[in-house]
Length: 329
Image 1 (cartoon, rainbow, N blue to C red):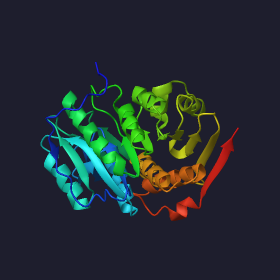
Image 2 (cartoon, rainbow, N blue to C red):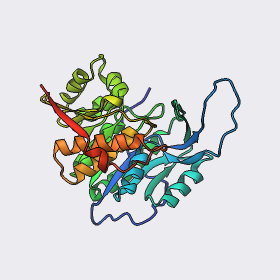
Image 3 (spheres, rainbow, N blue to C red):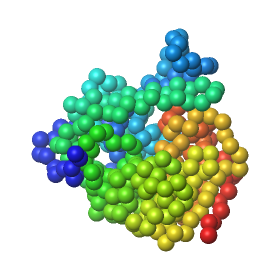
């Protein structure tokens, strides 16, 4: 069974940071990626289960939700640092791709092999094969948290996002929240289940579950009711993404708003939630109003659907003008 967040271990070994992290300005977003991956994307005309397919060379690059958040921010001229545990045969590919992309990173080398995810994109939709990931040793989680503790004071916003491998400490995301708040920084958490409830109760500035993660954490079948119950656990805002139905923003007192594009987009929804988190991080860092945060998150999420690769978005400017926000009584 998973345990509480680990204590620091002096025998730390991290992979060296790269690029200029601009620690003196607090201009970057610290992106904690709990379950990184090598993302492989194939784009084909048709997927026939049970058949062999000859396909074009797939696009492979470093991924995981926190990495995708950093990529979107980088694409939109923001600054981000990736913090993640990485290991196994694909570790060198992961590091090389971040370096090639110009994304600074602080990585902890672990024994567990970094997982792989595969997206098969066809005109009919996207099929995702996501490996669960291997358990990471207790001391390795402590090293990840030590990096977060060292980097948080210089960050503008801290983000903890993504699935978690088996046996992750029960309060890992809540501990990231504690560290960020102790450093005086806003913190966004994008996770599901018990980790989401703990993060909200610990004072997360914002959480961004999708519909499945929301119901996994709170039960029920009504997303507004579940989001209100989740928001009541803490002091921050719940931004619940609802696929083609748009996004909710819910405050602890139950006040809520719904945002949606004025038409449904065709495309690849993989990474849309990560784009929303990137938008929230940028907006929070700028001191934007709640309405601006919600509108930007919805527009960037929609823009991600128009790009075939998670971690990239189309130009969100035109989409932003087509977002409609409605208060909910």
